Amino acid sequence: MGKYEEAKHYTNGYADLSWFELLGQEGKAEVDKLRVWALANSYTLSMSMGNTEVLSDYLEFLSGHPKEILPGLVTILKSANEFGFPVEPVFERFSKDIKGLGNDLSVVDKIHHLDSVVTSMT
Image (tube, rainbow, N blue to C red; front, side):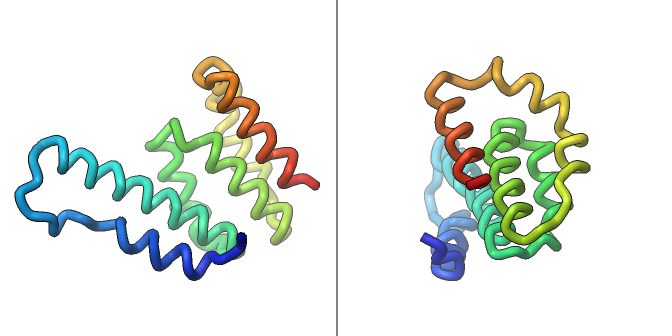
């Protein structure tokens, strides 16, 4: 919908929930999962707004979170198409990961991500 600034507000809202009291082991794991999601979504929002200054940090994040590589690359490709920056180094960096992606994804995930890529190119 393009409401990136508004989305940032909500992303910041779940980025740090460590203040919750009486969190057990499971609750702490959920808080940590939401922190990682917030960071991924923050990079996505920044890239979608044309803030390529976060690209190197985003790439480091993706390197440490392999399940985020495909959606991250889709985001980067969309941003590159819209804001005109080169992506060859990004795809070179993740070439081995890209080759192995087909083995780790369900058919539904493959269709979803393929649709995202095609949509970004139209």
